[in-house]
Amino acid sequence: MTALGLASSRLCAGLLGRRIPTYLHSMRVLSGMTIDQIDEEVAKLLELKAQLGGDEGKHQFVLKTAKGTRDYNPKQMAIREKVFNTIVSCFKRHGAETIDTPVFELKETLTGKYGEDSKLIYDLKDQGGELLSLRYDLTVPFARYLAMNKITNIKRYHIAKVYRRDNPAMTRGRYREFYQCDFDIAGQYDPMIPDAECLKIVHEILSELELGDFRIKVNDRRILDGMFAVCGVPDEKFRTICSTVDKLDKMAWEDVKNEMVKDKGLSEEVADQIGNYVSMQGGMDLAERLLQDPKLSQSKQACAGLMDMKQLFSYLELFQVTDKVVFDLSLARGLDYYTGIIYEAVLMQTLPAPTPTSQEQNGAVGEDAGVSVGSVAGGGRYDGLVGMFDPKGKKVPCVGVSIGIERIFSIMEQKAEASAEKVRTTETQVLVASAQKNLLEERLRLTAELWNAGIKAEVMYKKNPKLLSQLQHCEETGIPLVAILGEQELKDGVVKLRTVATREEADVSRAELVNEIKKRTSES
Image (cartoon, rainbow, N blue to C red; front, side, top):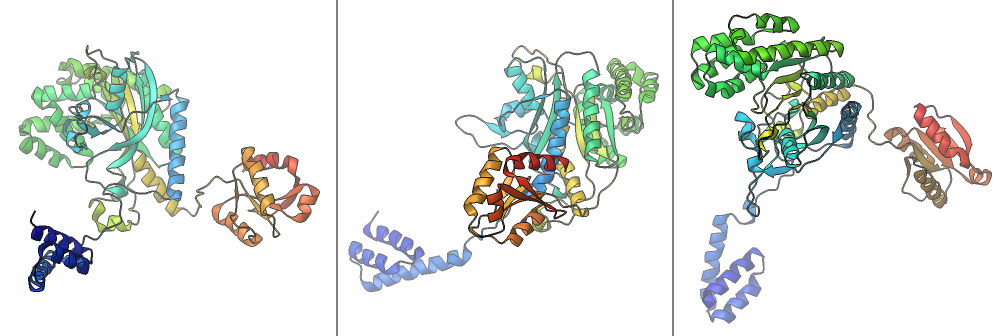
C-alpha cells in the first residue's frame, strides 16, 4: 500500500472514531501532502460517509425473542412445573425410567423419517466435517439410541426440547422451540397390551390436568394402507395421500379432496371412495362392521389392523377409558415411521384467544392464533424405525405417546389468568423476621438452622427491616409462616411462629421449631 493509501485508510478509520486531528497529522507525516491536498481528500471521504448514511444509518438493535420462541416468567414457570410434575408422576406410576439424548443429531439420522414434514427440520452449518440437524422429535433419537446400544427391551420417558422450522402460532401453543414429553415401550410383547397402556396414560394425564372434555382418536396405519389399496391409490402415493388425509382436522373434505386430485394426481372416483371411508367413526362395532366390508375385507393388512383394533378396545374396556376413545378412519398422522396403531388426543372445546403479547402483536404469530388448541397428545406404533439404524436391520417393536406440553400449558395459562387464584412462584415455607433492631445475626443464625434441617426459609436482606414490611412480603409472595425473633424470645429460648393467613401467633421452643413448621406446612 502507498503512503497515500495507508494514510487515507487510517483517516477513514479516524473519521469514524471521531479522531480527525490525530489522523490528519499522521497523513501529513506519511505523505508530505499539502494542506489543500489533505482537505480535498477529507472532503471526498466525508462525502462518501454521507452517502453511506453515517451514524444515522446504524442498525437499531431490537430486544426480542426469536420468532416462534418465548421467555417464561416465574408465574408461568410455576404453572409449567405443575404440569411437568403431573406428567412425570404418571410416567413413573407406569414403571418408566428416563434417558437423555443430544439436542442435535447427524443429519442423516433424521432425514427420511418424517415424510413431508422433513422440510421443517432445522439444519446446522458444517462443523468439523459433520452435517448436523436439530432434533425434530424425541422418537427418532430414541430409535437411534436403541440401535446404537443394542437395547431390545425398555420402558422409558424423555422430556426435552425439540425444534421445528415451522410458521408458529404461539397463542395456540405452536412454537419453533418447544418441549415434548414422550413415553415409549420397546420390546416384543403380545399385541395391543402396551398400546392400550399408552392410551390409558393419555387418559390419566388429561383427566388429572382438568383441561375439559377430550377425545382420543385411534386408527391403524395398516387399515389406512389397505383402504388406499382397495380404493385404487398407487403404492408409491400411499405416504403422500396419507399426509393429505392427515389435514382433515384442519381442512374441509372438499379442500382435502381438491389437494388429492389437483396436486397429487388421484382421480375423483378414487378420492370419493376414500371420502366414504374417512367419514366413519365408532368403536369396536365399527371394526366388526369393516371386517365385513366387501372391499376392505379384501385387504389382508387392513383385516390384521381391524382384528388388532377389536383387541385394543377389549383392553381399553378393562382400563375403563372407552368413554373417551373413538375409532376414527380420518386419523392419519403423516409421519412415515408409523406401522400400526396411531392415536391423537384432541380437546372438544374451542378456547378464546388470550390477550396477545407485544411480540405477537408485531406479527410473531400466524393469523389463526387463538382459534383453537388442536391436538394435545399423539403417538402410535413404529416397529420398523429401530431396524433402519441397525446394521443388520434387526427390528425392535416400539409404541409410544408424546404429550403436547406447550399446547397444554397455553390452556393452563389461560385458566390461571381467568381465575382469581394466586399462583405461588416460590415454595418458601417460612420467613425469619425480627420485631426489633440489631438482630440480623440472630436472624441469619436461625435461617441457617432451618436450611440445615431441610426447611425452605427466607430472610430479608436488610439489617433492620420493619416488621410490617416483612409481613407484607409474606402476604405478597404467599409465604405461609413467619418466625419472629425479639429480645424476649431470645431470652426465653422460643420463637414466635405466626400464621400469615389467620395472623395467629404462638410461642414455639427453638428445639421444636423445625417439627412445628413441617407439621403446619404439610397440613396446608
